[in-house]
Length: 170
Image (cartoon, rainbow, N blue to C red):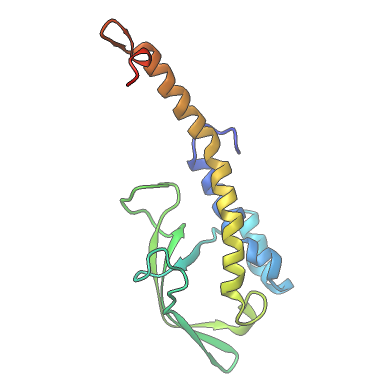
């Protein structure tokens, strides 16, 4: 993936394999792996990731979304910004990774769908961010190298005052 001449294709694949599913792989029960992880890895379903909240920007600790227990369910109320596979909007950045605000209005989720130990989700995600950042950098190395090469070629070929622009450095 690191040799693909754009960031979009590798990023689209990396969101699925290295951002939206690792917590399931590492902390998920056998049930969660069978029901959610395997269909994600085989491409049957597309996973998304929602960490940020609309009021908080990049402060992922400013969480207002909450879950309360009711019998064998969690009742989730709040909203998240899904920056990975939400829907297409006009924005700067990775156009291959759509963004959407997702609303939870007393959404019932079975307790068996908790990933890992109860109350540890924030810790798991903060740990996951380190891996995500490494993946994001690796995906962009080839496109950035291409940009530098293209810029250098342009600066060698473009003539200013009778000589290549590269020779007219300030």
